[in-house]
Length: 176
Image (cartoon, rainbow, N blue to C red; front, top):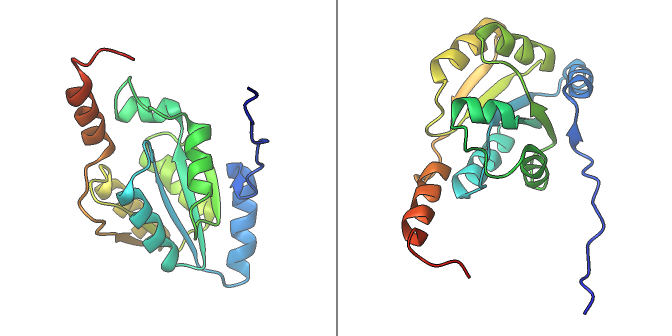
């Protein structure tokens, strides 16, 4: 029996940061309101979807930065992410309302994030429930004249809670 393999799909809305800097600048010149959120988006779940959909409704052009595998490992755990950066970017690129996706390998300093926000020319930065760097992002948003909006996503289990639940449930179950 032959297995059918779907041909690889080229996601037209996955960009390099440098390309997005140019796109966003051009859009801003045209008066388009540019919004941004960024994060791991590992083990995509309903709270992620709600954050992205609500964020997209708040701006004309919505950009999502997917944190690099290296960065996720630094702020989550050396065991994370579960899904690689390319897979996470492809998943997010398919969400209705997401206009652009890029790999966010920005360092963790305030100056690096300020530069990212300025280079993208964002008007709006959104964050979801449980975002760990609220104060830092708020300060940077204010400095560049962008709005920071915290989206009150439904309180569903986080990726970390989902992982713990799977481990607990299957800890003593023999592998198939």
